[in-house]
Image (cartoon, rainbow over all chains, first blue to last red; front, side, top):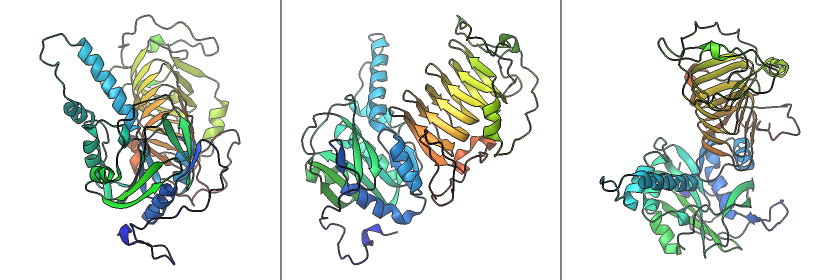
Length: 231
Length: 211
């Protein structure tokens, strides 16, 4: 399927055209709610996939699971950031328990990233129609990020879409995201799991998605950018 | 510690299995103190007990509701092998192998660590599970649960804080899961339009797709 050529009826918008914010959601506005035009577009892109397979790289929530199940998708979840932090913690413990001078003391970030991905993101190639990654990529270590992107590219089907969010400035708190409806997310404040690593410029976002085709970027009122990219 | 005689059969000839002597018929008393030694129980294999006759999907929840016998694997106990039967099972210790209950509910407590596929009408997890979960009636992932494996159930309740690394697939209520090797990936999930008029408890967050 060539999603880049997919157009709505009575629409002449191209894949790169800016998108005006859609109509307000029926969900009452609240401080912990945010409108996600990226999600709306993401759903539209994968709507032709039938029982499409979605990979959510954040925390699992009832509302998110049910939202996608009810729409006929098959959902897999993997809390990648939490797994990465727990992996680092375990490695640190191992190092502490390693006797001094046995030669295993020097571990590079690259080695850790490679070891982590030996067990994480283990899916068949060309498997997923869509990937959700809110508050993930700008929290990952520099050595891990490109490897994760490479792995995601591998497990996604051609034409598959990635929806990712990026902060325009360091966030004040760490949130998880629940899908409330097709264009509303609930932000769930969570004890800080990881420190915000860096703020990506738009060009840098395109760079880290090197193999992907750029589609659209949405900027919310909270200055969080949602990037939607296609394989 | 077992609180009720449990049907156990070895996974394979020569494999270790739970010892029947370690079980006590004490289904109504409070949980006995856990065995102090966390060492794995290695016992004489027990002859396999014929599995109970297959029940119809519709009768499964009803039978599960009438079961009042509870078996417990207490903290400090490690069980390796297949566990089958028709009772409620609470796991606060460690279990590996395969767990299949024709009726009843499997509860993995906060201290429970399970490395096994679990198949039962009802499954509730508060601890750690590494394996596929197939619940014919409903499944609950508590706020402290950590599951690595696929989930197959007609109704699911996920509390905030739960961790799941795997896929979620929904079946029709009462539909027997494909138990052949725990191949959840081969089970056909219900589509959004295939489930109709599911009797959904109002109190529970349920996972039956809408019609």
